[in-house]
Amino acid sequence: MYYENNVQALQDIDFCVTQGEFVSIVGPSGCGKSTLIRIIAGLIDNYVGDVRVAEMTKTDEQPLALVFQEANLLPWRKTLDNVRLPLELAEVCENVQKEKSLAALDIVRLKDFAHAYPRELSGGMKMRVSLARALVTKPQLMLLDEPFSALDEITRQQLNEDLLRLWQQDQWTALFVTHNISEAVFLSSRIIVMSDRPGRIIADVAIPFSYPRTPQLRSSVEFAQHVGKISSLLREGTYE
Amino acid sequence: MNNNNNYITVLAPLVVFVLFVIIWHTCVVIFSLPPYLVPSPYRVFGVFRENYAVLLSATFLTAMAAIGGLLLSVVLGTSIALLFSQSKIIRQSLYPYAIFLQTVPIVAIAPLIVVWFGNGFTSVIVVAFIISLFPIITNGTMGLMAVKPQWIDLFVINNASSWQILFKLRFPNAVPYLLTGAKISSGLSVIGAIVGEFFAGYGARYHGLGYLITFTSGQMKTDYLFSAVFMSTILGLVFFGTLSLISNYILRKWE
Ligand SMILES: Nc1ncnc2c1ncn2[C@@H]1O[C@H](COP(=O)(O)OP(=O)(O)O)[C@@H](O)[C@H]1O
Ligand SMILES: [Mg+2]
Image (tube, rainbow over the protein chains, first blue to last red):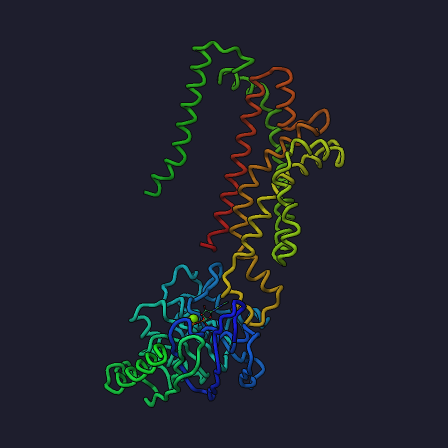
């Protein structure tokens, strides 16, 4: 895939994600991770190749949702109205909009803040609203592009645990971009490692820990071993 | 603390005003300035007391014309900005003509407007409208264009129509910008109405401030002229103040 300025962002990308998997993509910055996500989301169409996303099974389901690096809330809308946006755009009936949005806010534990404006929320809370907005359409595939990278470590870990809980509850497929290796190991059932630009896949590593995963996992020896392994793969890919 | 600040915002300009009137009066007395050049504040106040009915009704009429022009410019200016936001080609081909609104000397085209719209209220509104249009167009267009690319992505992913992107994203984003434009235009609309009244009138019985200003200066009634100018200034301030209040009220949502 090439951008207009002749930057080749991606090359020979070929992978498959099975339904219900949690796959992370790690790679040095500028290697084309966001480009890949945008291609899958259908926001870029001048690439060479083929992208297929599972057919929708239910009529009221959106096939995919995207969570960005920033929470990207609209500042003039209250929390509830931000979460409601995807349903509003799909012209779902108002009562259903409200009901589903409140339910989505409930699962990210922000129901009490339904009538607050984004400026009244902390960074972590905004990100949870952003997750609720993605989940409100009951997507089959969630694309998350470094969603927690602007947050402090504690908040990030909490949100990682929240995210896993939501994923286990609803059984969507997750494609999660990050440059934080321990985050990737903690969350994923599989990690795809990418090389420097033009981005290529250099490794595809299965992470065997069973779900549900607890915070204690982070301090285990096996966890550290996996983090070390991914790190050295990344280093090789970067200084080839 | 906050209360204290409120007092100061009201009191400080009042103190300046009182000082100004005192200095004005002192100058008139010390240099014995003739009333037809600089009347004393006392005289101006006297004229105001004798003619307050005429002055108030003139202020009211000018205010109505200015409001008419301002409302028209907000409605049409926003529509033009919406049109401008639709494509680069439209912006490039029409923007020079929008700048024309800004650079044309309004005094020069006002007589032409009177030729076209008649010697009455309509012409005055049109002059006020033309002079207030430009800030609405530029600010509105800026606000419609200044949306984060990720917001557009969000809307596209959710299959939003271009209509929805315009009215659920671009327009709400432009509201603060439009209000800034309207604040600038509020003062301009008063100027426009007064300039309009230099050339068009409301018949033999009713006059606007613009008419009073030309008439009294022609008659060398400088004290009367002063009170008409004073009312114009107050009117401009009231317009700006009202728009600021409305804007602050609406913008509570927008942070
Ligand atoms: N719109 C664009 N136009 C041109 N080049 C771009 C554009 N977006 C990204 N790039 C380039 O493509 C490469 C990959 O970018 P990106 O996918 O954002 O990387 P990552 O998300 O892994 O940091 C970078 O070198 C970047 O400079
Ligand atoms: Mg990126």
